[in-house]
Length: 382
Ligand SMILES: Cc1cc2nc3c(=O)[nH]c(=O)nc-3n(C[C@H](O)[C@H](O)[C@H](O)COP(=O)(O)O)c2cc1C
Ligand SMILES: C=C(O[C@@H]1CC(C(=O)O)=C[C@@H](OP(=O)(O)O)[C@H]1O)C(=O)O
Image 1 (cartoon, rainbow, N blue to C red):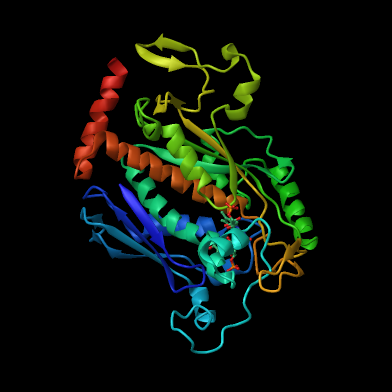
Image 2 (cartoon, protein in one colour):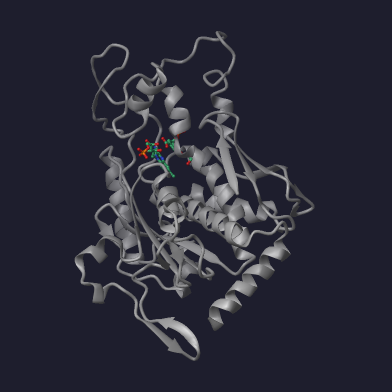
């Protein structure tokens, strides 16, 4: 499968085209809109999220609540566009544009993108670098999650830490439904309170915060991905997808960096045969061995850096005057860590759905389901 997204942060809409979905996948707005709403949420987001009310529109590939096998086009409107029609107009000349954005923000794409694409109005970089694009990726990810759900695979994301404050509650699947009710998508209510205070303080100080997220998937068949070639290894594909999300600066699978500090006996997951099934007591590998799913839960963590736009701006240089300046201040989030969890869950879901289609294929959902059933039965008796 493949997909593309298009659209600027303050243009009329975001668009995504997905190619390669099987026919017969039940798909309605109700499968996608709740994910879009979750991505908009989380304590610490800016005023843009008050303007937007993200919902998907199907422009192709879905009829009467099912995929036809044709490319699926998804659109998400930017309600804010109405306030930006003049600035975002594709017409040459016309009304004079608002003042150009020239004070490059350290940590955003402004300076590198300005030099690379030879823009002096850094809005031409910002518009596409913006994480507004992640609304399209969440719409695509929701389709992937729907496909995975039809195969008995489910995923979740939650916040492990925000700034220096860490959750003390270990993840359990039985706790997963509670994540959606938490203002920070964190399992620890006490830590959540302190995180909220921390966000308020950062906001008052004109500062921003990052954090660490965890994504888990269960029900994965054995053997997605492959050990035989670098670009087929699923850990590499997942890491690439995770690192492609705006502001993500680190990724680990299973024990991740902690594995490097332990001896092998405290890292690798011993295998037992119990009730005629392969079984393990630990999951340090995070569900991946040799670039393939091993049937255990997939466990991925990601580090998000603090938001780049600071209301108390860092020193920078104006790219037109070359004089010292305060970095540009745009309306902005104080933190977007919970939202990033939804994005990360989406991009991982896409990689998994793609790997499922690669291994099992099938033009229709029933064919795919049948092949996954057969593979699961084989793995159990192997
Ligand atoms: C959900 C989400 C929301 C974000 N909101 C903002 C924001 O309001 N202001 C900002 O400067 N950066 C924000 N970012 C981060 C920037 O998009 C990101 O830092 C920028 O595109 C540069 O990319 P890089 O950090 O990966 O190098 C957000 C990121 C995510 C994932
Ligand atoms: C629009 C979204 O996030 C935006 C991501 C973003 C950035 O620089 O990445 C900057 C802000 O844009 P604006 O200046 O329009 O408020 C965020 O609101 C969104 O997540 O839907």
